[in-house]
Image (tube, rainbow, N blue to C red; front, side, top):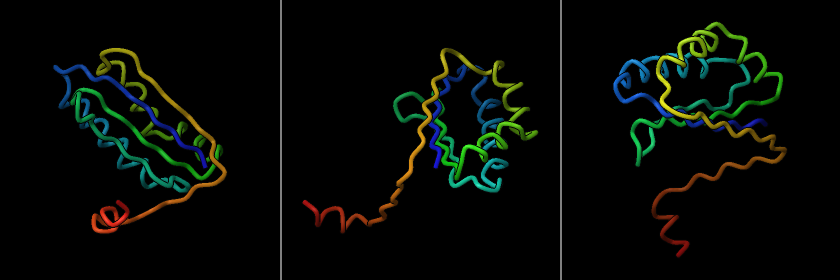
Length: 110
């Protein structure tokens, strides 16, 4: 599995437009074969910082993703909305485990 986490600072004056563009690329990307998860969210401490969290089944899926029309449009438009340095972290992970629990189970662990 490939995990990608990208942080993009957004120009506050163009925030609404940027979020719409991000919403569009996210919706399309979530429908791609081999995309396990593809989320975008704003940071709770800085609402003008958007964080992407992406999980792909393989490197080949990532390569197909960056060749899609919706990703190309996103990349072409991104410069209009960025206000600072973009950071991307990529990791290749062989062993992935998902844990799900409710609040009662969490509290019981204390």
